Image (cartoon, rainbow, N blue to C red; front, side, top):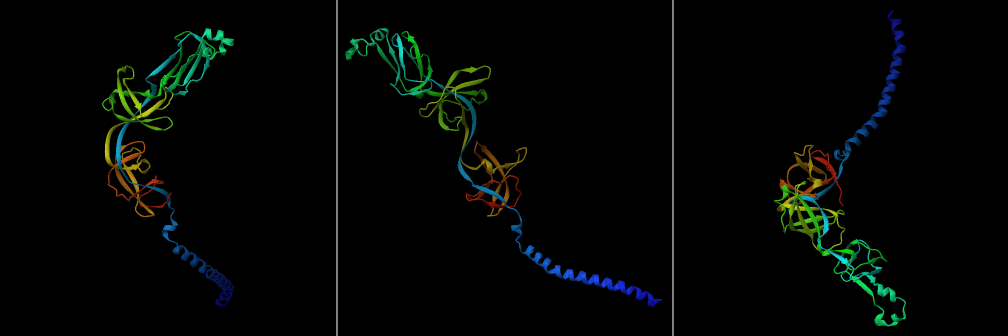
Length: 325
């Protein structure tokens, strides 16, 4: 009985031995490959396996910082010369167009009187002394811009008829409407910055305050004069930036360096501590303008590098790659 049982188990044991030999052979083949792969994985630096954020940096600046209020103003020519016909006659020539800049003494119109028109083509005009009889030139009394053009060529006008208006460019100003709550910050003689719609910056000065007040808007009217002469259309809307406080030797950073939470209660920056690591530094901010923000605390060293691009959403002690422009 025992002999029969052993005799029956022998084929099964032989089959199991064959399967075991196959498994061992496969293990012997895969073991070097697996070991080599592990060694290669272990040989890779940990830093190389981590992605690095591409960033740009900005140095810390020391400069005079001002806190400003910005208000809108419209261009206006404070002095305009009304050009009228010196005599009755026909307009034979118009040398200007609406909006043209003109120099002092430039030709604006030519008029021909009835007598001059009647003599036109007559032999008496061969006399040089009579050639200009009845022909009148009208010239610009000052440099400026043609703000109105009231007549056309060929029109007959009476003496004193308005022909055009020349707005003097040296008397260009901006009418500034100041809400009453800001009246303590705005005064005559105060320097300000005029920003045109094309982003051009012009230095200006507040020269006068008008006595009247807009009863509906509760605003006071001031006149701002730009430095230098320029030609601008009347009614152009500009932005006037008026400083309300000034601080010298302020520690500043570009606005792009400053990060904040959703409610803008906490502020921080990402500081580059070496060529590949940035850390989070909490800051206290002060004065602000359109481009920069004052940093009250902490005091950075002159050589510190603060992330200005690629800094949004970075964690503390993150690996970065500095892009040099």
